[in-house]
Length: 470
Image (cartoon, rainbow, N blue to C red; front, side, top):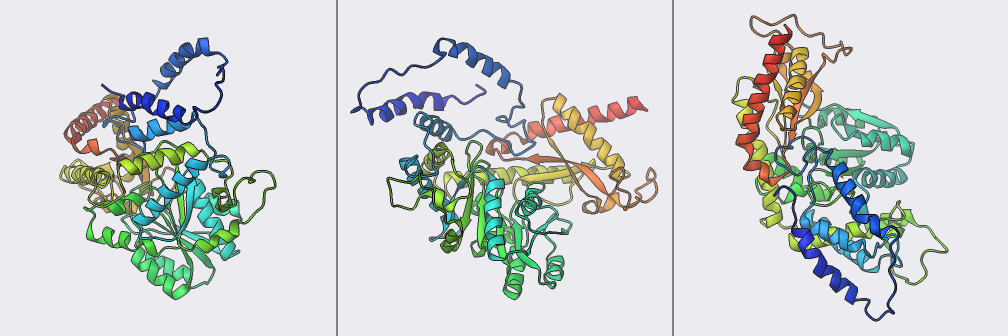
């Protein structure tokens, strides 16, 4: 079996239970336009969907993609028979309540018993809301984030009409706190974005140092934990990384994406605010939407209007099945991902063919083939990436500053050429094209030997191709 089928088996009984809740209504003739052709079209859909990489399989070890948990898939599908809209209680009574409960459980992961928060269409929209609030509270001031922060922060700042300051990183892909301190001296930074789990390298910004700077300068602190937020539950983080996660609750706002490690379908992001009073910034009136309830509805604390109640139902069901607690079954899955990443990085570092700039903090591994220059290493990475895909192993590619790989900044051995012109960006010689794996499926831990075997074969294939070209 390749594709999970358990969710198909539990759905009919749940569907009957749902239907029984409306048994008192007069029967209707549920006419479905085109019903006689549905099976044919669904077969066409299935054929078209085969034109995808195998995101569900451990041999897909590239981007941040994996299927949702079966309970999330089934609960989402069941909710679509009602198709609730969580913009207002009128459009999503049960699903709005489920969203509030599920979001409160996410907030509790970070130690927040009181909060303001809701689901969003993804991390981009969730981060936009957090930075919008920051801009409302510190109008005209800059948003600051590291060079390895997600590119969405620069885009969002532009959308909001706020200036943006990009801060350099240390050789492990984390925000340079000394550079931040220097920028803060200008007094024009209104919000600092600390990333706990960058999407490129999985690096965790030095939150303790950033918090110390906040105490001195009074900026608003937003933690983008869209990818890495759930790792606060993992029991096998390094001492340094654990220290950052232990302090995440001191942030003013947090974003986490349930559609990544939260086992949810796309798109499902979550934004949280420590101070519920920021809800006043969202205040608005709509004369036609809210007419049957005086309770606070989610549309009053969200920039988005219509939002799928099915996402909340799926998240609620998943968290009931797998509670967000340390030492639980959900946390064990995160720990397995991190174990896989550490093992892969250590195996690669022990192999003279590879350069590993640093061990992973979470479950993302980056490495490059050893070569005489950044240009040659980049060319090899591209060939290995292609060769691995031809053998069914799907990796990802990422450009990193050459400073992450000191041995590529100067001549090596007998085959080395002249020192690299660091200022020459015309052919990317100030960067290295690296190989990257996101080991976000717990199964990756058991499949590492097969993955390494395929990578070894891909390396040899790439070397043969190089020899044939010369």
